Length: 428
Image (tube, rainbow, N blue to C red):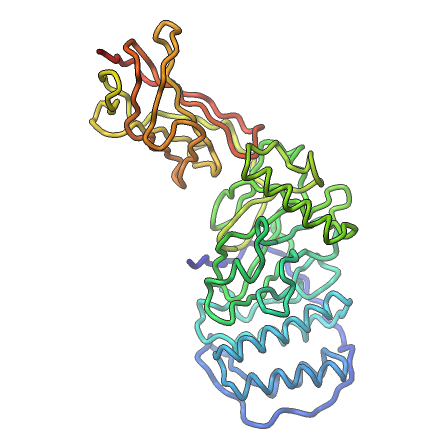
């Protein structure tokens, strides 16, 4: 599954700073290798080593040059070249975290690595060479981290920096790890996660390389927006659309920063408690009411580009098929001879996580047992907003209507207007 990464009008601020390391000139042997790439870009290991000398301290530059030599020995676009390239990016990420302000060389080194790592332009950023200057600048709310490798952070979120507004994060969902969510991707199963502020004050632009990366199970993307205040909002991704709500346990809304004071055992206990809440019963508006405060989050199988909150108008339910007369304990078909189908939408768009329940009403108030082939309670609408209740049955005679009601999982503040079917009769 590929998500195109098109421009989103993000303001990129370029900061040029002198290198903060010694400038050794030792280079790996051998000529540069040319690979299939966008016009004007070639894989040049000599240039990579020169950039490494400028960006890193002398000791770290020696280590990085060794990694670049391994890339060259293995050949461009090999699994080894990709894995060693991500290793170099992990060194860049550590320098960014430490405050290295040489963003020009960090961006150039990243682009140079990518063209040696991937020959398929579908894996590269849509606009290549990419401008990584914001992503590698500790002062401009950028984000830059490597995940998925055996030595990478196992489940740690990737955060925007500095940890103030605009603040955003990406993390594996539930108790999953980065190794798990990337296990279905081709070796080496690693990726660069980077980002920058979006085009609007509350949005953030998250991107990944390789661009074809798919997350299964999905990852959670969150913004430092209080879900208990923005009670009728869901997270929207530019190319995926609205995302199912997931409370963001790793965001501290009081400070717009991650929870850094919890011990590992407390973090595990919190995650287990949250898992129990999500699996064993309906979640409250925000599980943070019971545990830690969290932000507005969404679950997605891929990262396209810009994420931001979207206000959701009241959801309307509609019977796409009306029930026909039937006899006791026999299937109630629609008037067209098919299933009983209910569709939901808000402003014409499907809302993820909408749960719909079907009930039988009227019959002079007498109770009746309604049975549906796959259940009648809290059936989640599909991606198009449709729930197929199949062919229900009723165990008593009388005149009935079906009542469809619903809610949005984790977002009870979003109104869901019930719908009533046409009247139908159940005979002996």
